[in-house]
Amino acid sequence: MLINVLESTNQTFVRNFILLGLSNICRLKILFFLLFSLMYMLILSGNLLLILMVRLHYQLQTPMYFFLSNLSFIDICFCSTVVPKMLANTISRNQSISLWGCASQMYFHLALGATECLILAVMAYDRYTAICKPLQYTIIMDRKLCLWLSATCWVISFVDSFILTFLTFQLPYCRSNHISHFFCEMPPLLRLSCSDIWINELAEYISGVLIALGSCLLIFGSYFCIALTVLKNQSTKERQKALSTCASHISVVSIYYGTVMFMHLRPRSSYSSEQDRIVSILYTVIIPLLNPIIYSIRNKDIKGSVKKTFCVRTLKSLNTFFFLNK
Image (cartoon, rainbow, N blue to C red; front, side, top):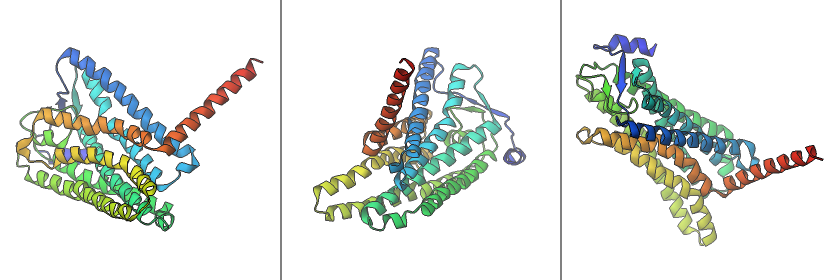
């Protein structure tokens, strides 16, 4: 349905685009293919392991880990909208992508990126409730509220992405069909249009302010209240415990929001193709790779669950081996 609307509204209909990728140098292409293949496998394995740990261990069945598993699932889907196609284009002579493929890639990329912004804000609110209202925490953050918050994040993001994608693909593309990027992202696509794009720019800024900046303000507000509560607490041990539960989240938020707002809220005059590619690699590949590492390294519960799982599996394997060799 969406593609029919796009075809009917686009004055200069482009049947496919050419993704120029990361580099035209053959040796660099091989290096990029090997590097990003390894990173993609690590992203999948790291985030799947984190989701598995949350599902298997009862002590991780809490709101914090529910939202963390949501984040891991988003990261898997987020990089999967970009990396497989990028890898295929790196080793293939045919670097084209259909209009429908380009629209789909942009739609899911924008939707999942926005969902991650909102989930990170919800995670900050969860930490605020746990630290500032510990006695009411289990009552406030019950299963029903967690599911409602998660579903709201997904719905808002996918509706927002539909609007931005539709506005982008109803533009006439008469300059070129060569996208100076490794996937279909809004800024490089808008530069290919020969019509006035002020509506698209306005929609992108409104979306960025409401979702990215709005979520960021909610996070800052939550941590401001947390800081006040922690400072009032005279126990050094309690302060350290409160800060340790927030440190991982603060690290992820700082990296993610910085790159997203740099990409979508800066002036059009400051755009450059090379800069766009570097920033896009950061939040589509590097951050999904770092998220499970950051949360695992700084989280005793997850580290303990991983050790427990592998120890149990190892013991079972050894018992089976000795039993069969008796």
